Image 1 (cartoon, rainbow, N blue to C red):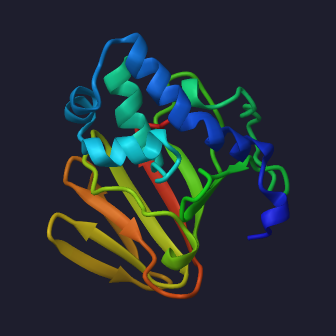
Image 2 (tube, one colour):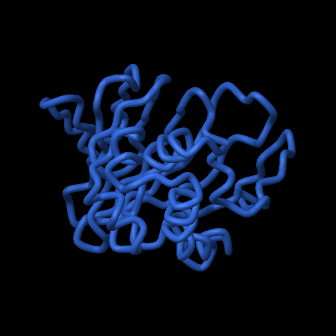
Length: 195
């Protein structure tokens, strides 16, 4: 993926931690309380609030639910809803320091049932510590286009190669990671839609 095509949306990553901290304070929640409600650890949330760790979309979704806001509270309103998404007009974003760059393949609709992303995973040694293992409502499907993606489901892991796909219920604790020194590109479908 061409880094020069990254949408200005990724500049919002500098304030995600600040927004979480502000919303937590407004609700009178401690890190421990927010961690319990969102399924994260207090240490990880503390790192996110200080921009020392990068949350995944699913973690941000869980934090947003715990804070009683929509995940879009953390993003500017730049995702347009055309019916056709041209390859050179995709909204592309990432959380600064995160190992994942997301290119939106789906559009924003009210009550959208599915979110589709082209996901590029940078090598782990080029990113901040990644997300904790997550569990949430919904289902996920990944199809590997390039590289080797490791999927953790509970205590088991699966190395997925180009042409491999996986489909699973998201209520099982899971995590995606690139353990190689090459990029990994995958098509990801998540329901319900996060946006």
